[in-house]
Length: 188
Image (tube, rainbow, N blue to C red; front, side, top):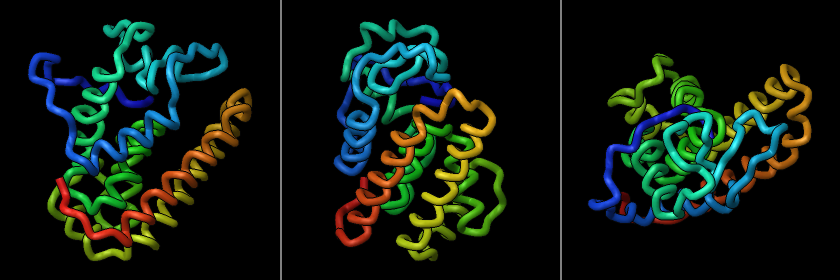
């Protein structure tokens, strides 16, 4: 998981995320798995994909699933304005923010919809996204993600061991997001 973001919701006030957010979170949880402490992984110690590197104050080994879901919703779904984007695009931006960083996720979206790449999802980004073909945007977004993984492996050749898994992940999220393009659902 990339890009430290602080969860502002306490465990005492936890409310489950809306359905579309929960669907995206479950996808990430399935991709990330449970506790991992692979010395070759630049993310370091993780549980449910939540990294000690970005959350040094958390006891990663004892992190609960409920707390991981809360972090994903507050620090990744809401922070990246996924609740304001079409569900298919929100799913892609969310997964990207978790695995490749929020700044990259937001700026990639902005580049692809032709607005200023300032890393802040606002009215212009949301409007431009809604005017763009979701399927074409998802395909181009996936290409950008694959290119970024390729660049990471070139910079850190030890990361080649993760490339196949990363590519499988982005194609899985592409498939899930494309399915959402065809569904008509109320948004959260």
